[in-house]
Length: 62
Image (cartoon, rainbow, N blue to C red; front, top):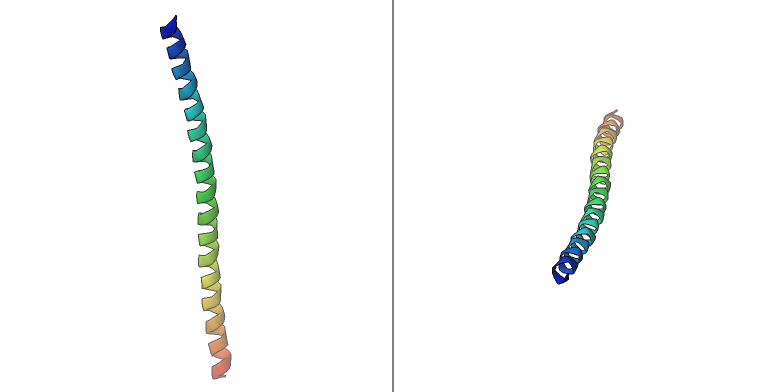
């Protein structure tokens, strides 16, 4: 009986930790998507700045 209780408790602990790990993985994936999205937006904005600088140079020369 004691062995059965220990095995059940072990299973409960494993289930709890598995749930915690899944939640943590989900948080990390969400954070990753957010940071990658921001990084892509920064690349896009840098390209826009580069284009605007070129346009500005054209007007300065004219």
